[in-house]
Amino acid sequence: MTDVLVMGSINQDFVLKVERRARPGETVTDAVLSTHNGGKGANQSAAAALLGASVAFLGRVGDDGFGEPLVRALREKGVDTALVREAEGASTGTAFITVTADGENAITVAPGANRRLTPQDVDGARGAIREARVLVAQMEIPRETIGRAVEVAGQEGTRVVLNLAPPFEVPRAVLEGLDTLVVNEHEAAFLLGGRVEGVEGALDAAPELLALGPGCVVVTVGADGAVYAEGEDAEHVPAPRAEVVDTTGAGDAFVGALAFRLARGDALGEAVSYAVRAGAAAVTREGAQGALPTPDVLGPA
Image 1 (tube, rainbow, N blue to C red):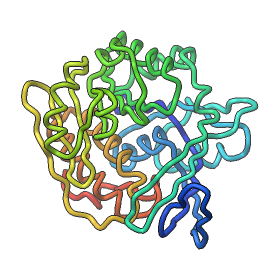
Image 2 (image 1 turned 30 degrees about the vertical axis):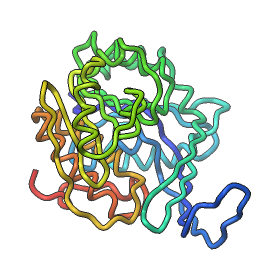
Image 3 (image 1 turned 135 degrees about the vertical axis):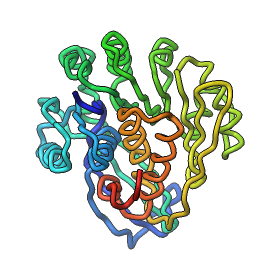
């Protein structure tokens, strides 16, 4: 049986380190370019695998030459990529990321082949979904594909963790099919139609998010850790202090670690506590997959 099946995006990341972002119509020079393996789905699968989970990945790359090295890198991290295919005539997903001196990032994504993952592909992977303890998805693939995956997982008795990133409207039936909904403050605000800021805002928002249908809710609050709820009461898990270099992969490290521990059978609070530590560790290095922590970095479980 597989611990975690991740379905989602796989991207080639182009990262520009800048002192500040350009204003409209302005050119900023002296940026430093680097390339990294990315995509929320690929990052989350790598995060779980590096922490010791058995992981399979369902996704699509283009036939442009970028995809094969990205898939190979996942295999080298221990991810089963048998369900990854090339989409004919499509470009591999690409992300353009600017990182400022304080470690904060802004990301623009050209999804490419990620949009070619279809509900029919989900049906073809039904056996893999059945054999997984936890199915993880994000919003960089078509929404109808995610909806079908939640439906199939429900039929097969597989728990679903949905990271609503980037935020999009999803049907109530999808939210009701989730074991765990993971959002940050901005994504929580999008769902609720109001502002959600900081720990107190997340504590107030968690019950409202639960009322939308998911079994559990986790709201990440950056350097302050995360808030979770699975009943009437919401709890805050603070994050350890970390020297911020690049926040690009922190959320994906969090989700991968959370899914791993849920698959292992941990209670939600224990899984969130571990995930918070993983997210904090990920901000101390550059890039997304290159910054993902391993068990020796996080210490005892």
